[in-house]
Image 1 (cartoon, rainbow, N blue to C red):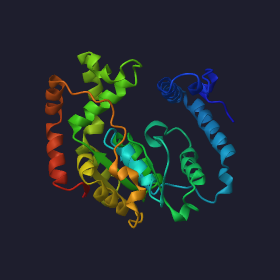
Image 2 (cartoon, rainbow, N blue to C red):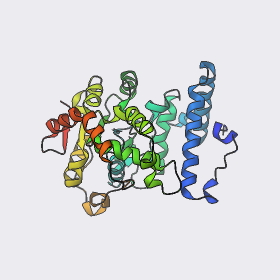
Image 3 (cartoon, one colour):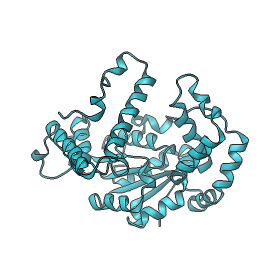
Image 4 (cartoon, helix red, strand yellow):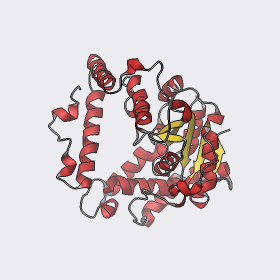
Length: 317
């Protein structure tokens, strides 16, 4: 198999065996960031070579020529980060008729220069490894990539070109709480000692710069408008995180209906309907930060109240 750019740096694939898990995860993020930046700054010809290497590697693993047609997703959770997307993806994966790809592919947002076969292979390999379904026709297949939500229109159009009938789900959250949760989690990953308090040690400039860069993933009115300018509104289901925590079964059933999965399941076999996960560091928001975000997202908060009313899910139309 073709050696990846990260392997050429001498980063051991078994690093997690001799360092703690936090450092191991950090190395993984660094490897992915290195690969992404390297490919992004390559000249056009080198990008083609880079893409060809990925195609060759994936063909060696699974064998694209043996399948008559590519395996595409039935649904995609397109975001937003820190809004419960991991919980929803994992809860859906506990359903007997649903298979989801692990992690986040982020193909359209971070790897558009890779061949499309690289994307399709993620689903083929996940389906092949699943023990609860017998084949493609017996399951509903999907993925979660939380940064798809803020993609520009041209990238959404490419997604539509490849999977025009896919069912889309975007999860929302009070944008003030979402931004603070995102900052806590992001900066906690950068410090090994007392990571939960890292966000409180930042300079005002660093924190405000982070809020500015992440603002698009919290502007849900723009996200909905942007996606429905390409996809029909009935293909986009918008989910409220806060109301989902109050009525998880109701939201779960609405999502199942949206993606075409059976709703006659045993809730005892979906443990995540009574659990939360990935809640992040528990650090209270400083008052000055709260005032800043309150002002920044006042209009967005009102839009969410008007959009949902007392419902946990709503279609974009």
